[in-house]
Image (cartoon, rainbow, N blue to C red; front, top):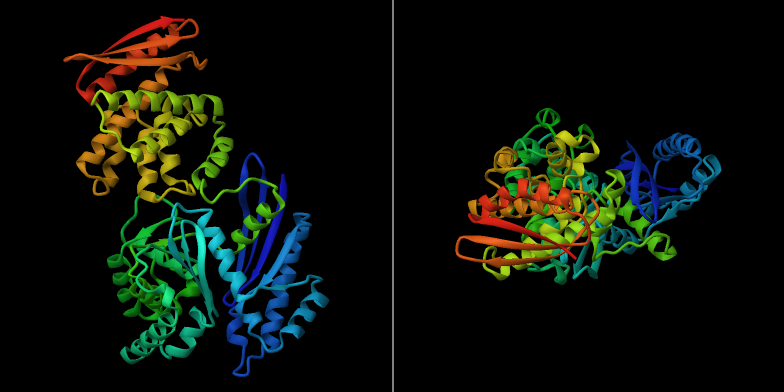
Length: 508
């Protein structure tokens, strides 16, 4: 195991994040500590950072150094973005940090800041083409990528803190101030011809975007945990903006989901997201909790070939962590994937299922994770499986698909499926619910065919008659356990497809 850390000196916050990674388990964040410094407010009109601002920076870094020393970290990157980058006395600031703390600070260029955000997004979400926005306190980075390849990037020298300072004098942004801010944002965004009419999702990074997602979840009484890969429609985003713009600071501070240190800057921040949505004609607004710091570490891992990281296999990378955390036997999981896929293909061939590549992918993923809740308690493995998958952040899967995955990977019977579905009744059509039931029943049956955990069944042939299906199962050993379990569990699949199933085990 190796530990690495990034200290990100931003315009609004200063944050220390510690990761550990292993080639067979992937990368995990183990510490995340931040303080609100608002360094951009200590830049005067000439661009010089005041002694007070420098003092706040030094004191914060000295506190972080104690944590770094406690963890015995030797692999550390200290980076600074807009506030220090824009400071006229930048060299003096860096010298003071080196003198007082003993660290060399790297000033990220605008291009680097945008690039690292893009790297984090394409390695942690399933979005193939999109626009990213990383709005800090003093700068806003925007990129456009196609098929996970970076096409364009730009950094604007404004952020949530500086926009608030420039366009919002009181507690509530007036109508006149709103018009001026909108005109300003349209002018800046229109300067980038490559942004126009992209019709792709916006993937937002940073604290302001995270708070937008959290507030929306609280208002909707969202039934699952986590904001990573949380999706908002245009209606949801714009309605929330209007609500935020109408509230006083006191009212905002009482709003669930909004951090107290962002109550005065969330209104202008929400306007930025909406104006970007308009110019790109986006298909949705998505939050990614992976950003600049994660991008820095991921890029280093790739450069040094320390661990394989693929932007095209985001979910597969997540499986490493899940397999480790819940002691999934990879051989059994891969066997389940193959067996269930074979059964699915044959049932499609004879017309019992309607073939869908999306359903087949979902089935394979569910097969890999089927009943992972056994790790906690075998008697209630279905409940634990559903809860863990539904509420755990899994890179590469949006929330809607994560619930689908949780439902089929935890399938026990129709009644438990209906119980799990209850909070999500509006998420899925009746047709989708029936598909989930069929795939879940198929997985439960496939699971029973490995009752002794010896992977004995090596070929399945499905034959059809008018009233029943006959499955011929060729095995490489004594299938006593498999015969008992499959006869017991086939009823769920029979009810789903409305046909009886006859099993014939053949020892090779």
